[in-house]
Figure 1 (cartoon, rainbow, N blue to C red):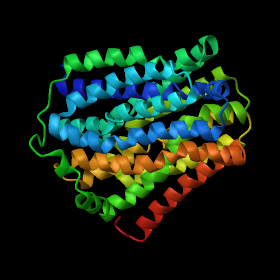
Figure 2: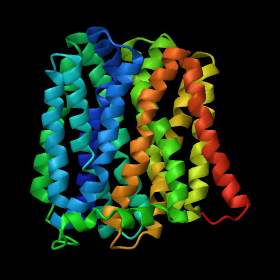
Figure 3: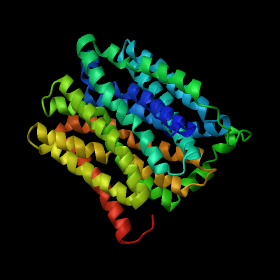
Figure 4: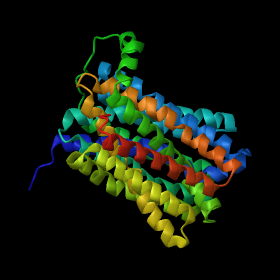
Amino acid sequence: MRRWRYSETVLALSTLAFFATMVGRLAISPVLPMIKDEFVVSNTVVGIAMTGMWMAYFLSQFPSGIFADRYGERPIILIAVGGTAVTSLFLAVAPVFAVFVLGTVALGAVAGLHYSVATTLLTRTYDEIGAAIGIHNSGGPAAGLIAPPIAGWVGVTYGWRPAVAIAVPVAILVYVLFARFIEPTAPRRPDQSMRDRFDLGAMVDLLSRPQIAFPICLAIAAAFVWQATSTFLPTFLERHRNYSTELASVVFAGYFVVQATTQVGVGAISDRYGRDFATAGCMLLASAGFALLVVGPGFTAVAVAVLLIGTGLGWGAALLPRFMDVLSDAERGAGFGLIRTVYGFVGALGSVGTGLVADLFNWGVTFGVLAGLLALVLCALVVNWALSLGY
């Protein structure tokens, strides 16, 4: 019988840490209609709160890489998980909407310290990074499997405040496990000053490389759609499909179940057949899924749509290794964090943008726009391949 290896412990606990930070963010979406009603705000205003959370999440990606280069990956991940517990509790006791917004921003900021640092840690641990990143990424969808139904049930039974607090015990448990079983890693640049790392010229040079700039543009559009879906899919199901909060939460969880089970396959396909091939396949599936979700009749259409969307929006396991492929070992910590900050910060507008379109038009038009964005990404990939542009 094969012995459990330390590398598998790193992968398992990094995935659990991602799970914990994602539970904090995803527990909010199923109870957004309740939050909206209690504070008497519009979809656009609620979208602003969620966009603030996701922008803060991605803004912290770049400095997280720098901190990890200076102090090692372990303490940064512990701060991310512990901070998720604290800020989730803060959200649960917010007395007014302005305080709630501050709480969402703080939650995003601390949770965002995890992803880039964990990806770098896995890159230092594994050679086949596509599959490893795919497994790690499945921690997010796994949180989506568990958090929405529980949050939805708790919200209906006890109110939205206990619902958003479900992340607290989860994060505390993962914090203890990570602190106990993960060994400190040697910092890559322990003696370099923080000011030297924030070199504007070096950052512009990295981001302007064609092999980085092109996939960043693709990732912005794809992240916009992912953020919109993670924020408003339960609301769409309630308002457009007339589902109950509990049923909408279960379908929302199903979307994450699909992502959790297909992420590894998407990453493995990208390792074997190429990053662009796997990414294009994801865009095709997800855009078709959104179209079906809007116009398809009956629950069967919704189930098929969720299968397509969940698989397609697992694009990160295909597209993100593309950046690691072109970054040097010395650039991977802060460089990947910078890339995540740029595409994720802009993509976070998916929450407020989607809320605004929903207020101006309706939920059917809104999700049709999301399908169109993914179709544009697919077209860009096809043109790049057909014309051999090399981006």
